[in-house]
Length: 111
Image (cartoon, rainbow, N blue to C red; front, top):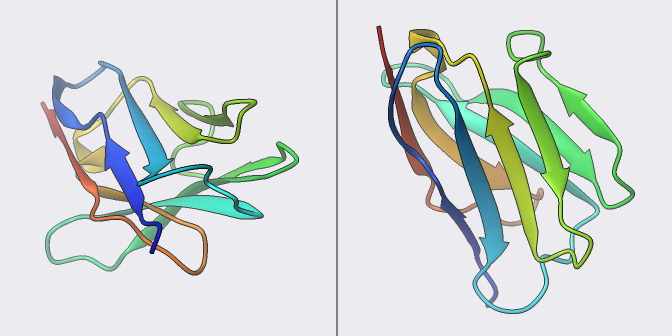
């Protein structure tokens, strides 16, 4: 079974940037809509952004203007570029296409 694999998380200071990647464990991603979500300790999972196979994007109000979601033309990877990071952006970030979800990648933003 093809799984989603996230990478690119890490520890960054407030104001810094990270780029997360979501790829299939093998082959193409083959999605209609890929969403990015995050979950902080003790909190519910939160929607962050999404992109359709056609390239249409959508963002949560909390990240609009700071985050950018994109995909490569080969449909092998979806990216989440995060700029101007804030401590409240800390959490485990997941990609989810509605049928599959990866293990997540930890993002920690220090103040």
